[in-house]
Amino acid sequence: MRFKWFQNKLTFVIIPEANESVMRVKISRAVVYAALLAVLLLTGTAVYVYVIHFHTVVATQMTESKQQAHRSRLEQDLTSKNKTIEQLQNEIFQLSKQAVEVRTKVEEMKQLENELKKLTPANNTLSMGSAKETVAPLAEGGMGGPAHPVTTQQMRVLVKQTHESYSSLQQELTELQNQWVQSKQTLLEKRELALRTPGLWPTSSRTVTSPFGYRKDPITTKLSFHRGIDIAGKMNDPVLAAAKGTAITVGFDKFHGHHIVLEHGGGLRTWYMHLNESLVQQGDAVERGQQIGKLGSTGRSTGPHLHYEILQNGKSTDPKPFLPDL
Ligand SMILES: [Zn+2]
Image (cartoon, rainbow, N blue to C red; front, top):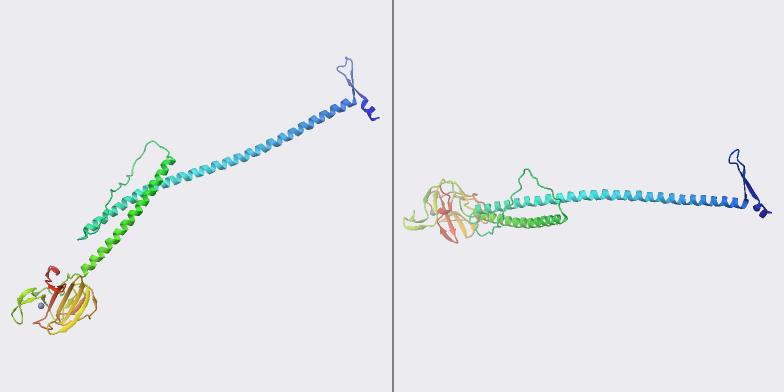
C-alpha cells in the first residue's frame, strides 16, 4: 500500500497565457520528495557552512583584536623604555660633565694644598702631590651643529669613561685626604714645637741689667761668666713661662733664692731665679705665657730682678736669640 503511494504521480498544471494551451506535467511523488529532501539537505549544508564560517570570522576578528591590543601595549612599553633609555643617557652625560667639574675642583684643591705647604716654613720633607693640568670648564653660550644620534657603542664608551673618571677621582681624593691629614699633623707638631720653644719675655720689664757672658761679678767684682741675663723689675712683677712645659724644679737655696726650672722638651730648659714667690709646684704643666712666680730678690741678689737662663742639652746658652725684639 505504502509502495503504491510512492508510485502515485502528482500532476502539475502550467498555464502560460490565457490563449495558450495548458501544460500538464506528471511527476511521481517519490521524485518530488527526493527533490524536496535534496533542497532541504542543500539548505542545511549551506546554513551549517555559513555558521562555521561566521564563527571562524568572529574568532579571527577577536584574535586580531587581541593581537592589536598586545601590539599596542608592546608599542607603549617600547616608547616608555625608549624614554627611560634616553633619560638614562642624559643622566650619564650629566654625570660625565660633573666628573669633569669635580676634577677641576680637585685640581684646584691640590693647587691650594701646594700653596699652603709653601707658606709653611721649613717644610721640605713632605712630598707634594703633583698637580695635574686643570681642566677648563665649558663656557656658557650659543651652540649648534648637525645632530647625530648617539650610538649604543658611544654610550658604552661614555659610561666606561665616566666610571673610570669617578674611580680615579675617588683615588685622588683619598690621596689628597691622606696628604691633608699629614699636613695637619705636621702643622700641629710645628705649633707644639713653637709653643715649646722659648719666645717670650718672661717679665713685663725689658731692662737688661746684665747680659749673657763674661762680666765683673756684682758682689765680688771679680771676672766671672754670667750664664743668663738679668732683667730688672719691680718687686712682685709677674714672671711668665717663656714656653709651654713642665716645672721639673721648684725650690729655694741661698744662691738661686726661690727658683723654677721648666722642661720644654727637645733638650730645652728655662731657669727663673731670685723669685719672691713661686706660684707652681714641681710636676705642674705650664702654658706659654702663664704666670709661674713673682719677681723678687731672694738668694744671691743685689736688688729686685729676674735671672733668666736657657739651657740647651744641659748647657747654658744666650737667651737673646730666644727673646722677641724690643
Ligand atoms: Zn743673673
